Image 1: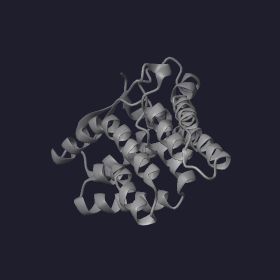
Image 2 (image 1 turned 90 degrees about the vertical axis):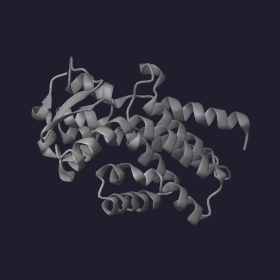
Image 3 (image 1 turned 45 degrees about the vertical axis):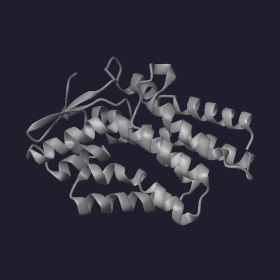
Image 4 (image 1 turned 180 degrees about the vertical axis):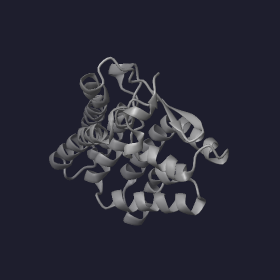
Length: 230
């Protein structure tokens, strides 16, 4: 693996990831709105969702626009990963690109390092690296959440399952480095929301179904009419 090619792969992945489609589409579908966060009334409590991501667009404008934003966020990771995979089939630069895209999405230099939670670019990049991993680790994460009776675990633990998955697949060190970066990039950004959801669930302010509706951000009940102005 060439140091300079690896550096270029990281820079390209980061810059692609740092493109904020939430902000780009937000200027069109939510002109004048604050895209830094939203307060959502859930059950007896109010949750502050403070990530600039496809979920924010979905919560404020509806699942259709949120889905479009998510697809674009997946594509901005998938395309450069695919390009490096095809250009350097005998090396693993694509893992560097995929990891850097998630870091760029979560900490974009163009927007004072204020970004999203990274799930969409993570899935987009992983679909090119190992498409079978997407349904498998997602299912394992969901099952883990069901067994622990915690919706927070269902949503995010799939990234942890990357480690045993890559071990089972006999992947190289690049895959494990990628999994490490993904976990380090994703957990800190999403943990505040996850912690509040857990607290609200334990306090009886919200049940698991309501929490999952928020996390998937595609339920019609969580549309623009349900959010509280910033």
